[in-house]
Length: 83
Image (cartoon, rainbow, N blue to C red; front, side):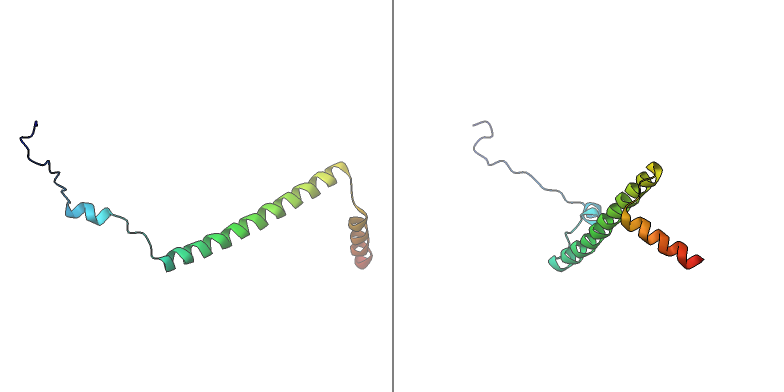
């Protein structure tokens, strides 16, 4: 044997400053709170995306002069209330 029968040992050196930078994973309760917050943000983002899509479709319709029956009916009620 190359090491004369002695077992090889690896020394693990831990420096105090290294321990200060170690990130300890949050507890299960903290993880659940984080998940709850991120889930709510996901819902808000999805609602904003849906609203943006709807507004873009409305803009496209108006640029082509296309309106639906419902839009005509609502617009006529608004106009008649102003008069």
